[in-house]
Image (cartoon, rainbow, N blue to C red):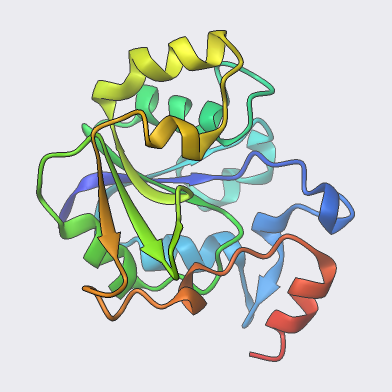
Length: 191
């Protein structure tokens, strides 16, 4: 058992997906969010962060809304940290249907000191599949009040640790694919 919380961030507007709820899109006969829930089974707790709670009641998980509305993913991460029972929370976007149990376990099982643990795949940070520490709550609140909600900028202001794909060969960019548009979703069906 991984002594951390997995928080699925399902609060986006899905504007590039014609406002279809990305978490509930189907891939291999399961919704995106069901794929992530299955991949996160080894985590001590799984929660959903969304302001549309009625969409997710059927999954029998705790659902929490944003406390600071309209500030993008940083609002969701803030709510996840405030509501999780564990000190470390792996926050993952709901639009990553290819993520696997093995990948989440690699990230979740790394026990070192950090405020943020962020995978770096093909030289690009993956802030929406990263672990955040509750220690960051005051700093996040300060950023949200100032409307400084750029996630990458926030991360580099913390004591962060990078998980390099060069060291962890399993961290393949395929698994970190975000599905944001109808074309990307149609391409996904071919995988």
